[in-house]
Length: 201
Image 1 (cartoon, helix red, strand yellow):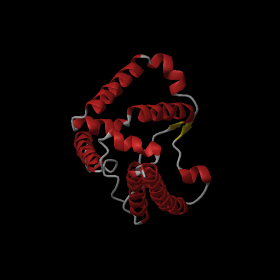
Image 2: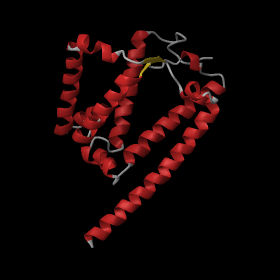
Image 3: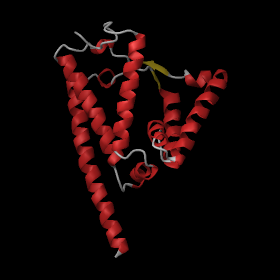
Image 4: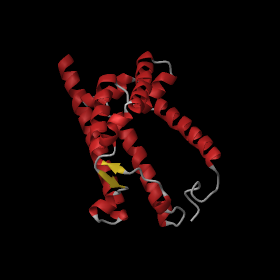
């Protein structure tokens, strides 16, 4: 095993911050190239007019999943050393709901708000400032929110652990889900485009 590099001591915390910064710059660049610095493009997915966000993000998830899985199969990466964020079911459901509302209303998620702000979009900058206000507010009110924040702890979970199914089967199922999702997204976009043409004629 040679990966993950940080856990095997190939570099320390200082270099890890440089690596994280470089990865963040690359991630932001590709988000911008995909057009995710525009609230109109991002919000269009909620109206099923343009599902580029769904297709790009699902592609990224599947690509990362396949890469990590096959690196482990070939003995390059030790999955046991890959950090998993512990699951706290109730606060994560509430947080996801709040994030979803903010996404629909503002047209950006935190990552795309950063990209939009970096490209000079005023609406994204407002959302960007709101993110920091939210982080600051949460920090200030944490003693009051701590009980909710730590509610329903479930530890570090993976789909194979929850379902009892082999990793390979879960990976295959997610790939099939992605292919079905891509086909469905294309179908929906064509239907919506046809409706638009009919409405304008």
